[in-house]
Image 1 (cartoon, rainbow over the protein chains, first blue to last red):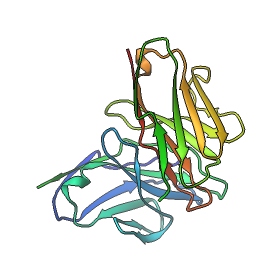
Image 2 (cartoon, rainbow over the protein chains, first blue to last red):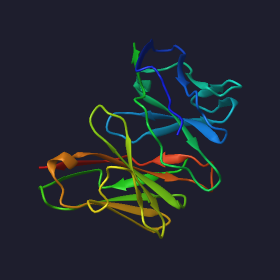
Image 3 (cartoon, each protein chain N blue to C red):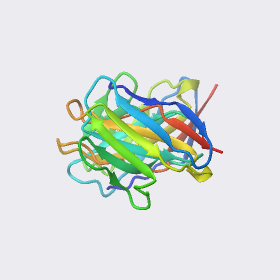
Image 4 (spheres, chains in turn brown, blue):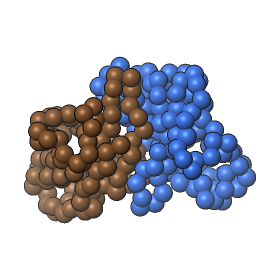
Length: 113
Length: 116
């Protein structure tokens, strides 16, 4: 499983765009990149998933460069409720289901008024 | 997105008793479900992979006789903590793999276990 590295913590302010970068230098060809958000005492919530280039949904964008050795989660116009831990994960999806996920320490994002 | 539920959301039990936690995929079928454990201020740690109709696969260091897993149907997996002790107190979270959909793991809300 590819190991991921992301900042332990980040601070920002309401209304700002927040970008969290994750490094995954030994990502494999059939690995996907997935980001989850976790609030205290809750299960992780799926945010976005991608393989290459750019993926956008209603809550975030995911930028993946051509070499796929890193990825950046972009949260537009954050609010106080975006304060949470964000996990970047890399896992193999082969059409027959996924493997169990290996969670790193995640990034604790703190949004201030 | 796909919905995964857990029951109970929290449980307090006496040392030596057994506790069963249910994980259900509500709007999709899950051939594979996963069980994780999370201690305070730590990340999630994979305990075992639960496959429908077959034996679970446990991660190194996880006692299979202590953490019994049953995956009797495509929408239900159960984790039973047998002879629970205070050190088993933790946050237990399951996830289900929506293979028919976008192949993303969706997590349940978690179950807080406190063993006295």
